[in-house]
Structure formats: structure tokens, C-alpha cells
Length: 248
Image (cartoon, rainbow, N blue to C red; front, side, top):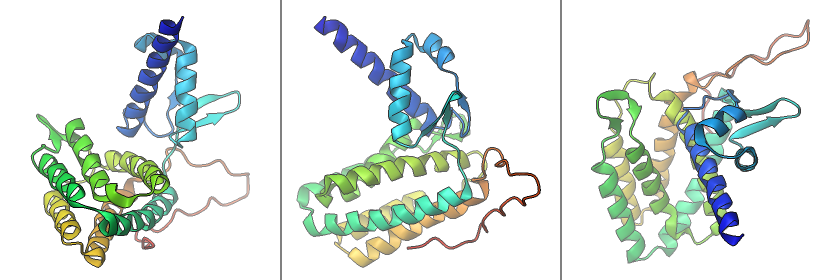
């Protein structure tokens, strides 16, 4: 019985991780209806396992549940991206400041190692320049996590991780449409050097620019999947200006 429960739990966890990865990589597109029966059949897992996984993803804001209508991947919009970026910058800078104040030589070593791995990992899939390498995406996430690892606040780090994943979904959406002309390695090296120099103001400025640049490139693409329905006779709300500044 114990072995059966453990097996069920591992299948549920595997289903959750697979669905989450598909959403973050936009293999399941924003607004797309999640076909539970198809997923159960293709992954060989139970309906209960998928529903539990979807409940967790709903709590994370990656999936939206509608009464009597099932589950959809959370939509994207310019308003959401602007708010997300502003919130992420505020929290990221707090975590970075705390990490610089509390970080030790082990923290510094981990940052250097994470940057080294990131700089040595090709960003795009070989033979498909329009696709981001999953290895690079993992190394990128690990590098940004290493910068704030000495923050010392589990709650701040947990909330920061949620915001990172939400931002990652937007970044993945932009990859096929945005020309690959950004020198990310120089940006990441600058972040590392400012952290190692314990330069709070310099690191904050670099991180703000790093995140805002990403948003500026993605913003024109972050349109809702479908226009919201409005009552007859009411004008639809105008979309936000794509040049609207990101609050810091």
C-alpha cells in the first residue's frame, strides 16, 4: 500500500512538472484549452493525477479554471506584463541588496560558477535558431537565482521565483518574433561583476535595465489571445501604449 501511494505521488509530480514545463515553454499556448483526456492518454496517467497537477498550476497563476468549462492556460496581455515587470523589479532589487549584504565567499563562488555555465551554454537549439535551448533556459534561471541566493528570506525568494517563471513565459513567446541581436552575455557578465564588487547601486541599475530591456522587446507581442467580450454599445478598452514606462 505504501509503495502504491508513493508511485501515485510520483506520477502526479511527474504530470505536474511536465505540464508546467509545457506552459512555461509555450508548447501549451496562452489561452489554450487544456484537454485533460488527451493528456491522460498521451502521458499514461490518471485523471486524478492531472486534475491535481492542474490545481497546483492554478494556484501558481499559470492555469485558469472556469466553472463547468475546464482549464485553460493563463492568458497574456500588455497590462499584465507591465505590472509583472514592475513588481518583479521591485522584489528583485530588494533580494539583491540583501544578498550583497549577507553573501559570503560561497555565494560569490556560486555566482561565478553559474555565470560560467550560462556563458558556455548555447542559447538556441542547434539547427533551429528560433528555439531556445532548454539547457540554456535552466542555466539562465540558475544564474539569476544564484545572484539572490544569499538573500536570507525564504518568502521573498519564493515570491521572486514565481515572478521569474511568469516572466519566462513572456520571454519564450518573443523568441521566434524578436531578432536575435542582444548581447546577453555582456549583460550577465555585468550583473556578475557588480555583485562580486558588492556594488548595490550598480547591480540595481544593471538589473533594472536587464529586465526592462526584455519587457520592451516583448511588450508589442504581449497581446491578449482573444479580445474580451464587451456588452453591446460599450467601446472596447484601448490597449496600453507599448512605450509606457516600467515603474521602478
